[in-house]
Image (tube, rainbow, N blue to C red; front, side, top):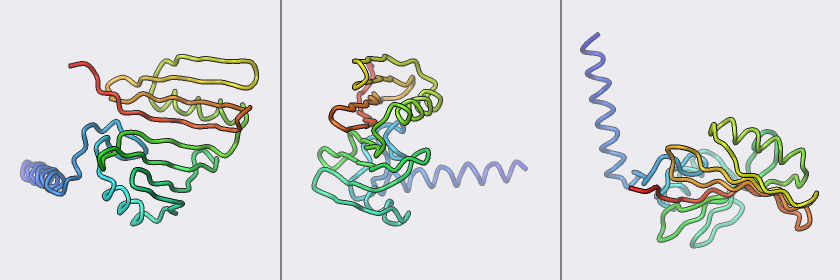
Length: 160
């Protein structure tokens, strides 16, 4: 049993070293949609392709994919600065309050976080979340008047 645990730990160390050598190491694992902040454009592009996601469009600073979240059709957008992931967005097709509250409940449960809520009539709802122990700020916004429903993740380093 001791030998098995030693082999497992050695394998974990080797895999971590290989990941760092390949430039996969991220700034923080609290990133966006499965990738840590600082993950390279090339890595995300290659990985999403290998995973079979449908690329909608790409530019020098962004990658757009189609996807699903809680049975909602979404666009997953990875945003880069200097070739590394610094923010991301889910653009949700349904622009209604029911969809908003379903996704908002999912986010609150997933991150076990308190929220700051802003409501303006029946047309604007915005929630800001700062999940503990992460370097992320999450803004979930429904703007019925402008027909947008997005969840944005931003890299925001904590205080040292």
